[in-house]
Image (tube, helix red, strand yellow):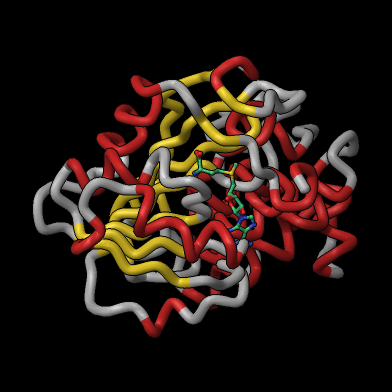
Length: 257
Ligand code: SAM
């Protein structure tokens, strides 16, 4: 069962306490836990005084959860796949989100979270390789669409790295916790954001090529116009997509709208 549902349970008490703290849930706060499993993180969240709603897809684990935590009076368990879960059914927030995510679906879970406006802060565990992509700076292979999708709506920071030994059973990969704080509004207006994704998807789809060429093809605009927009954003006309920082992508989207 391990592979599909990603059931590697975190054992390290310090790491669990650090995740609970990094998600920002204090006394009386509403906390949303994704994939509580056997409750290793649910306990620290409840101990921090939060009211916890835990969404767990494995029915047996969901049913057993209240009996596994010291104080279940502040716990609500939802036995459902988080990707199908209606976030609108949650009560008023702001929600603090925490989870040791099942790695196979960590990226879609994060995208679902980013598009929801009910949360303010989160601490989520990812496969380290994915975590590095979420917080990547421009200029390297980790920087890409995943990085931009986070930057559009949140600020992210790597808070903790964990070796396989911190889990039972051991996963084959290293893990890392990323703390996120949601911006009150996306960095771009909706119309500009549409253009932003057309540009960025086209360019990162061919990340070894110069962005000017792929963007001009994708938008059917003269290359000289794209190069001028790049220059105005302070970017060399020969730049590859991974060399273009978020503010320059945003400026390009606005200029080429
Ligand atoms: N948080 C627990 C811990 O640290 O010990 C368990 C983490 S385990 C990596 C992932 C958990 O997420 C498992 O309990 C698994 O059943 C659950 N899960 C997997 N896919 C899910 C989904 N789509 N929605 C909700 N829970 C899911």
